[in-house]
Image (cartoon, rainbow, N blue to C red; front, side):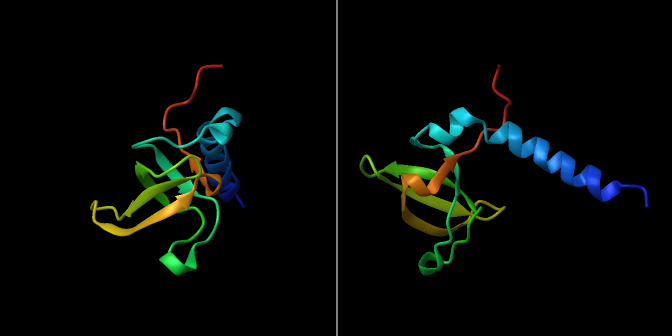
Length: 95
């Protein structure tokens, strides 16, 4: 056994650590932020972890989020509670 699977999971955990800093957990999603769902939404055909874009803040508690496939075609647009979203970061934040 060469430990390859452990290295693969380690890279995933490092990436998640960079993406999900403590600061981004507390930040409310804003217009055009890339977000991930923290809960399943079976009524909308969405699962926890799916990634979307905030297309319209509705009020202080809710935002309209568009979920698209790899080709950019929207497969769901749903109002989501801000508490059920986390803002994703693709660039590590400075310490």
